[in-house]
Image (cartoon, rainbow over all chains, first blue to last red; front, side, top):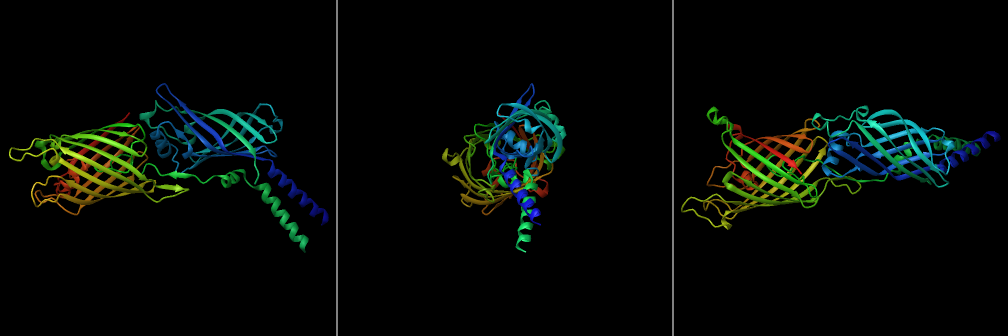
Amino acid sequence: MKILYAFFVCLFLVSFTNAQERFLTKKGIISFFSETPIENIEAQNNQVLSIVDASSGKMAIAILMKSFMFKKALMQEHFNENYVESDKYPKATFKGDIIDFDNITTSEITLAIKGNLTIHGKTKEITIEAVTKKTDEVIEMTGNFFINLSDFDVKIPSVVKNNISEKIKVSFRLYHKTYKK
Amino acid sequence: MKKIFLTAFLILASLQLSSQDLLDILELEAPVTENIVSATFKGTRIVNGHSIKNRKDSELEFIISHRFGRVNTGFEELFGLDQANIRFAFEYGLSDNLTAGIGRSSFEKTYDGYLKYSLLKQKTGANSFPFAVSLFGSIAAKSQKAIAGNERTFAESLFYVGQVLIAKKVNSSFSIQVTPTYVHRNLATTDADPHDIFALGVGSRIKLSKRVSLNAEYYQQFQKLESINTRNSLAFGIDIESGGHVFQIILSNTITMVEKSFITETTGNFFGGDIHLGFNLSRTF
């Protein structure tokens, strides 16, 4: 019994220290870019929530769709109302594993992240690459990748087919700091 | 005994900590944001009357509106298409909350100008507020020459309208607006005609699909002009959104598009077939 007791005390302490190894940001930046010969569309979100668990190499990102800022207010309204339907699907999320997370160092290296990206209520498994580095207080991750709108059931009406690209470039810059509960 | 409890607690606590989902933590950490409800109405008009929608800062919109004659005039008049009242207008966002507009209607050669200010916004999340309020004021000047013996001064050609627009987006597919209205005319045609008319407008939007909505609008007058047989204005419209513009197709019992006219000078009987087909076309620059 005593051994069992000691074991659970250890487990408790271990999970407690694990919790200390989480890194969080509430001000992550994610932007997307649609490029066509007619027009370029760009939007940026500066309020992205992202968390990395340094003990397991798992990470999660939550993105509020209404926080994407466009240059033209009308575009922003259309984006929320007609394309991603923010009232129905307020958030995009990502949940995944940083592969070979143990290789992370204080200097920049590129690591792959594999996980599920959910936008507009549709989930797709993706693998992306991120330039990462870690110090005692900070985990930094930057990179970009492409998504296809059709994978997430975001439809482009034929009238604006030439104005919106089917392939969207997504860039991210996440500056996680030690998360204290 | 104590130990067992402590053990049980430790087991639960460790399980709790290790299995806590990362997304759940993000949920907990998410700041409560203020959300301004947008797209209560798509156009600056519900049908004929103004909605709480403003032009955004520095946005210029050119609007061409048409109202044809009555459909019950028959084939000879091509169901009203031979006759038309046209209004050209420019609307400009002085800021996100203040829109100014000028227009000119062929009906009585009327010039009009307005200001619309968004006073309160409907919000969810932090600082939530259940509805939106805008203030609207317009001046219309009739420039059609008076018949001999009935000449009027410029001041006598002026009309003023004040409105409080109170709107609520109930859910993503239904919005409603209540519009207390005051109309003042400097010149009354006869002594029996009131200079001041109060009216109450009710308008709504029902979203039929992502880009199409059905709008309806009714203005109840509390005083009426006596020199003409006026009726309350009733109108239905379909909003079709295509890229940067909203196209509106309209059926109403009024041929005019200026507040003072369609609210107080409508004579058509909608259910008697005095229906005017019309459209609003806009282009945003």
